Length: 346
Image: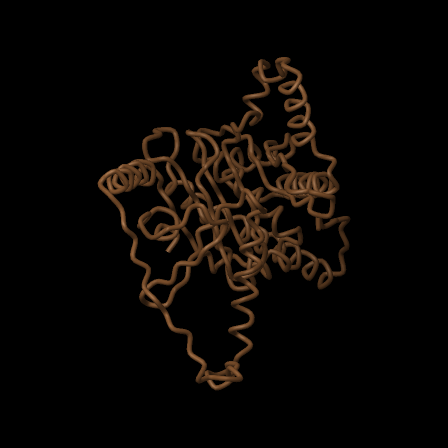
């Protein structure tokens, strides 16, 4: 379905429209959006609203009946008249579209073994922080223990003309946890639990800062525009650390949390050797979308998707086992009337 909406049939797509819906023959619906006019979460919210309205209609007879059902709208076919020049332009556009579309690999995974309720019950951190940390670990393990500069979108719509700010989720705290997990063969000891919570707390701090318009990326973008309008160079882009940290659209992981509804979306990635990762964290499952370029030997959408799925389940299961072990220790101590100074991390 994601491929149909994003990579197929350009002849029947209106790419100059911000939002339009595609209904497949079996009744499934996908949207193609161009969100220069608004953030990507807007069509997600519209689609969720439509889905909730449909769900509220318990049966077909509950659908609203028009006040004047006999006042039918007459549909008239529109016939377009075009010459060979227009036809050639259409054919060139189709060829160009498929040249780009065929180079994009898109994967959608539904993980029922790890849900929002599981995270709340066993891990007890914000579900978005849980996914972002698992994403970092999945990439870290797949790409030779190397961290990835990561972009996560934060909404700043509370401010006048506010759109988004960047949450830079690849922090030293996250990298420390990833290294500890790989060095301990993914075993969640008390040390790894503490590092995980430190990284999750840092992620929450960054979310709060970005949502309050206290991030750095939009500020730096404003400075670059001022320099451009003044005819001056923006010297920061010449610093190697600028590119390595994701500056100038070089974030290896371009990500966004799409909430807890039923809708899922995704886009192409930000840089040629990176990934696009978009996800929803529902009560029934975590569903995520991964995109990558096929002609890049440094990236593989299917491999990262598999690594993310595996990591989500492994980390959740590790917390389940760790919590159970702590409960057993407390019960055992109580039965033999011996008390130890054992302080749970959570």
